[in-house]
Structures are given as C-alpha cells and as structure tokens.
Image (tube, rainbow, N blue to C red; front, side, top):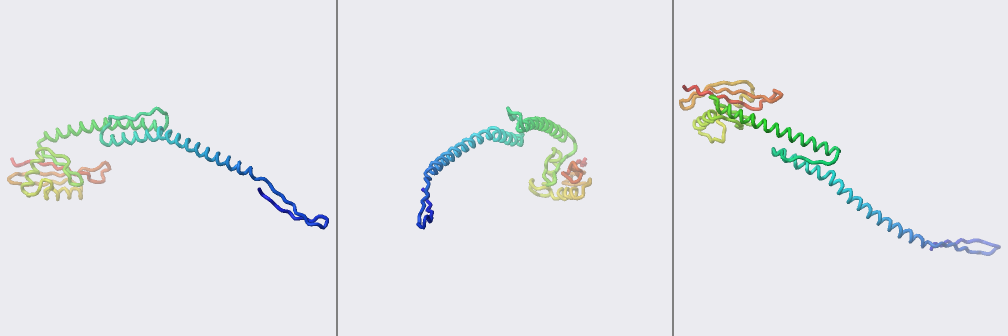
Length: 219
C-alpha cells in the first residue's frame, strides 16, 4: 500500500484525511515483465544459435574449404576444387579459385617440361655450365661444370659445401658490377676459359644470378 495523510481545518476543527492506494498490481506487472524478459532471452539465444549455424554453413565451411585448397595449391597439388551451390560472392570466389588452380597446373606442367628440356640441353652441350643465384647458391650445373668444380675443390682443398674462393670472388664482382667477365684458369695441367654472365630480373634493375660458362681449352 501507499498512504498519504492530509491535514485540514473545518469549522475551527482540525481534521486529517487519509489517502491510500493498493499497489499489489505492480507485483503482477513485475512478474509479467520478468516472464517476458526470460522469454525474450530464450528467443534471442535460439535466434543466435540458428544464425551461428547458418553463417557457419554459408560462410565458415566455404572459407575453410578455400583455405585448405589454397594450402594444397601452395604444395603444387591441384587435384581438389571448391564446390558451391549458391550464387553469391563466395561462389564467384570459388569459381575464380578453380580457374586459378587449372591455370597454375597448366603453367606448372609447362614449367617442368621447359626445365627438363633445359636440363637435357645443358647436359648435352660441350661447355660446362654453372648457375648461381644472388646468395651464391648453386642452382644448376651439367657434368662438365661439376668436373670443373671438382678440380677447384681439389686445388683449393675446401669442402664441397663451400664455394671455391676464386669463383666466389668473381661472382661477387659480377653481382656488384653487372657486366660480363672472362678469364683463364689453370688447374693441375688443365686450362679453362671461364666466362661469367650476369642475369637480370624482369625490371633489369638488379642481378638475380650469375651464369658461369666453362670451356676446357687444354687440348
């Protein structure tokens, strides 16, 4: 209850007026509000779960599939393709991923064939060939080039994992001053004519490697 007392004067007599109201209806309203709050909370939870599974199916699973296929492409495995039954941006992305995989597969096959052809050509020519990158790591060689390296290793008495000093100096010089360098080298009664040619990147701004051409002129 709520009560209010009002004092008044009537005919020179003091009086008091008691005013009160029944507030029990507020308890019922509070109970109803609590029920509505619980119902709304349950409804929001159900809607949230439904939306979670919906987005997981429409977004999460396709994105996970695209990620796994991208990792496979990085490993040169182009056997898998993405599947999409919808017509949205993810479907377009999946289609582009499939086309990219086919393009990479064709390009990789062509590159492997060209590499095999180049290796066969390099192996069959009568000139020794060594190819070093910027880090002076040997990436390609043919038998005559390997034979020249063996002579250098024996003459310099260094491990085969270390580039011979005379060759390292020449390669550093070509990388620093990118121009063709030729010199003759005498190793244990063998005479070689060595030519170092700088190979540039696509922009022709920096040297990406050095091609070493070796001719045995002993005879």
